[in-house]
Each structure stands twice: as C-alpha cells, then as structure tokens.
Length: 292
Image 1 (cartoon, one colour):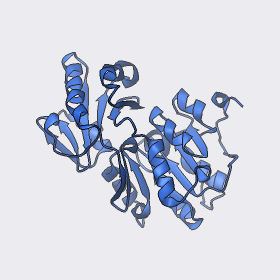
Image 2 (tube, one colour; image 1 turned 30 degrees about the vertical axis):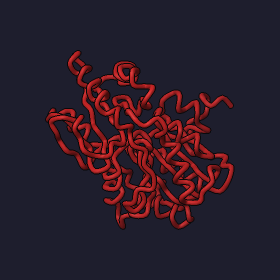
Image 3 (cartoon, one colour; image 1 turned 180 degrees about the horizontal axis):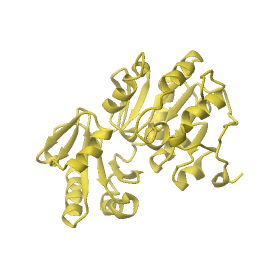
Image 4 (cartoon, one colour; image 1 turned 135 degrees about the vertical axis):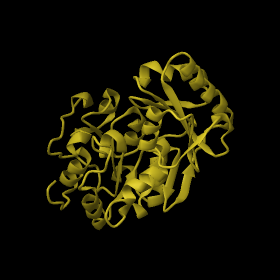
C-alpha cells in the first residue's frame, strides 16, 4: 500500500520480516511524552524485552550524558547496559565506552559559529550549542535559550567564545524559536560542501560530519550486537530519523511524524502523546506488560 496512506496503528499488528532482536527508538517526538519524560511503563517494557533477549537502543540528537541520566533514573537502572546513539549519530556509547565517533571537521567550527552570529545580528533569535565529547558549550546567558539547551544537554559549559572551545566537537546544534527548516537551515548552505546540514526538529538544525547519521550509527550498533537489519525494529518522527528507519528491517513512524518520515516507514504508530512506541512494542512483540 502507499506508505503515506499507512494506517495509524491503534492496536499495532506489524508484519515483521524476522524475529526482533533489537529495538531502536528516537526520543523527542517518539518515545518521550509531551512533558519530555519517559512514560511510566518504560522500565516494565525494557524488562520484558530483556527477558526475551531483545536489546534496546535509544537514538537521539540529545547528549549521551542526558540520555544516560534519563534511563539511569528508571528503577533498577536498566540504562546501564543499553547501547546509546547520541548526537544524531555522532557517537555510539556502551557502558560509558565510546564505540564509534564521527567528529565535525575541525575547519568548520569557526564558519558555523560565525554564521549563527550573523543570523543573530540580522534579528533572528537563534543560539548555537557546540556539542563536544566532554560538554555542550554555549555563549552568553540568555535564559530562554538555556532552558532549551538544558532540556537536551545535561553537561553544559558557558564560554565567551565558541570558536575557542577545546574539545572534540561532534556537531554544532542551532536553535531557532521559529521554524528552523524554512528560516534558519538555508543560511548554512555555504557550508554544505563540508558538513551535513540536518534538520532534527521544528526548532533545531545540526551541522555534522557528512557521514554522521543515525542510520550509520545503527549499523555500527548492529555489528557490535551481532544483529541483522531484518531483526531490527526502529521508531522515529523527524528528518534526522530517516537513516534510522532505512537501516532497520522494519521502520515505524509516529503519527506525529514529518510527512517524509511517514512516507519512508512501513507503518504508522500512535503519536508520542499516546505512548505509541511502548504500545506498539507490547502488541507487536506480545510482551507481558499489564496496562499496555
């Protein structure tokens, strides 16, 4: 059937090409609820997956430290053994060990920061986060911008000059309070021959290494775990999730997904405000989780 016409799966019934051994999910707009928190049933679903020998992998534009904090707060800390795809595929981490990393080309940091400064000088309310291996780095102390940063980055350092940051830079994330896809992302076109300009949400665009991608990172995680693509079930909602869905045997878009993501998916699950990821997993994999 045409994928844009794929039904919203209120009680999902996926046609899986093979037994699932790995579940990978985007966070914001997918697994996380409208409060940007993990649903209450997350720990129970992770335990049910683990009992069936199914690995779980969060895949997010968020910082690894932020993801580790989110899952570490669950009862029993099931996050300790997860493989994490962070920074939109810029880094893959397991048990605090970096398994793969794709840093931003070093000659791009300066031009990227200057482009953000030019947008700000032209009147756009934008801000840049230099996402490093040790910390997320920001200029200035604008409280509104910092609230958005701290929602996605748990280790944040304020500096006077982002171009002087001494860290391995994984990406530069740019926030715009308006629609970043049409307003801000085009400003980075002059850098497109050196970086990947990736719209990762309505208000965020990431400047990354050309080969950095959630799908590339997922293929690395699959090799580490000894899992084939057809044994992988993935969930996503935005343009930064396209590679993720394509690297999985079964890619599921959320009902709230970008139209291009819905078109690339095998099926559409209930939206993130309706606990779509967990409900789909329980139904499609026949997990014993009461209340879902």
